[in-house]
Image 1: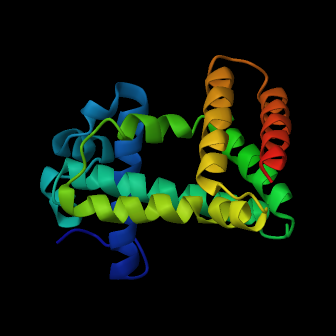
Image 2: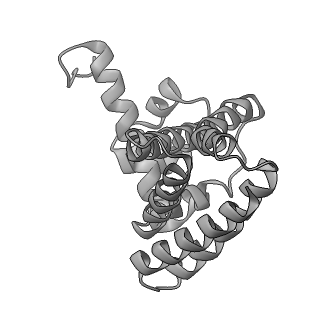
Length: 193
């Protein structure tokens, strides 16, 4: 019988799951998302291949968990950034800034790489819910801002943040790109009110 490496069986199972997830992240970042196979993840984690199947049905199921966990992390990060802000335009500004800081710190590359792998059909709704939760504070701020065409405002913001992301990825000064994107986006949104 394997040794339990945590105070409880539940904690031990979570520890093992996190070991497998960390191994998969490392494989994705260093070898590309196609390197996430059950055998490779097990080897990287120092566990038997059968151990992976105790936690995940397949490598695609593991990738779905990684995507959902990253969406949760990012959603929490954005919620913390705007929690004490009441003005909708200031919320939008902080949402843009924090989103672009996420790009600058490189974590978005994990999500980009994981999005190239197909996730199981039965997990797609769960991932979709994660995306909606991520965007909920932005949608709420847009609704409270007085912008009549909120879809247009959201599309405008997406274009601005996409352009700034590309520039940050290209090596431009992140804080300057964040400042410019925020200034440009807020001016545009205010013009839509």
